[in-house]
Image (tube, rainbow, N blue to C red; front, side, top):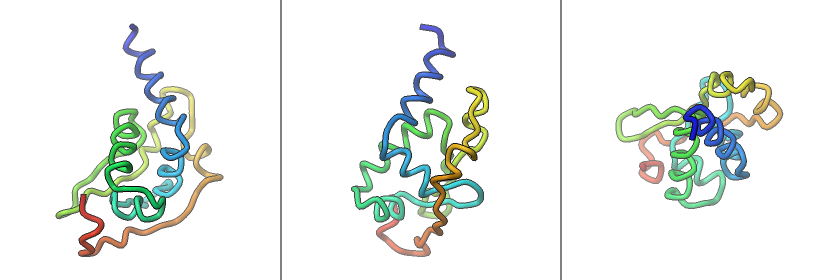
Length: 111
């Protein structure tokens, strides 16, 4: 299979799941970065489930992970949709929520 077509398929599959769209909405656009624990609490799902969804989003180029001490914070890659002619800011704009990560030493946020 054409690798470009496969990448495009992965991209749209990542966007085709309601939980992953909710994760993108919670993380939002801009400087908002959250850890798995904060996302899991907001969605009321397990941390392992959120981690699996984040892995799919990361592999599709939609989120990035940055380690800060014991925590890994995730943020939206705004440029993630540009090669497919999509503007993630527009896509997520109507879904936006502002959250800050409460993990300042909170053990439940560790992944």
